[in-house]
Picture 1 (cartoon, protein in one colour):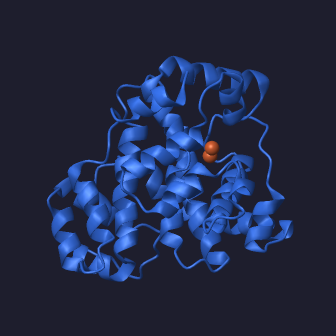
Picture 2 (cartoon, rainbow, N blue to C red):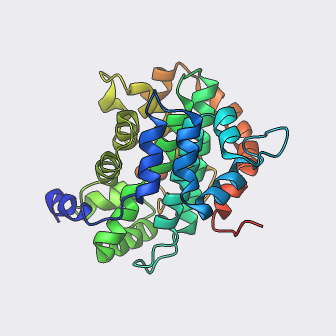
Length: 286
Ligand SMILES: [Fe+2]
Ligand SMILES: [Fe+2]
């Protein structure tokens, strides 16, 4: 199967609905106000309720309950509220995807784990734009879902091979001559009009060394390291059962030592408990 063939099919994949798309563009507009963003979100009552529920989740640790969107946006910032809206959309396209016969709940868990871990690592190494790292982590493997949509038989063949041979998703893609999922992830994120940093970090997450000359080498390194850790911790399931290696180049880019990862893992375990509401996005709001 050719990459070109898959890329053509990507155009048929669901893109965020118009409201989520407007949230993304308003959130990146420097002239927009909290009121502008709240007005867009309020067009969808169920989305509003879900966003407020996550705003008030342990993950954000706010000292009191927030009931107004305006206030949520002012306290947490445009990008965080955008991240919540994108998580809700991604959840429905990954887990609630009626076209797929596969239950991707464990993959969703992998997405959330990586998102939370990337935001945390970004914060720990002092990366200024930690909110973009949440989205980079969330969407890094979205290409796997795309493959399942476009060629369910190919997806089934990959997951069978990863299990049988205890290898990584990418190794199975290579054996089956399929284009690799980071490329597909990057193409999808481009289509969703998300910042370039998210496109690059997703496209490079299995090959940080290829980005040594890039201005994005640090974000690629963050996603690479956290993806490795989340797999190691067996948080969720990314259909990878071996064959993942941690790039020492990625550690060097961030200036961290392997011992730093023990500290990161401990902190990450706590953050994941606080982020549990992201796993239950479908829950009706009471
Ligand atoms: Fe991956
Ligand atoms: Fe992954």
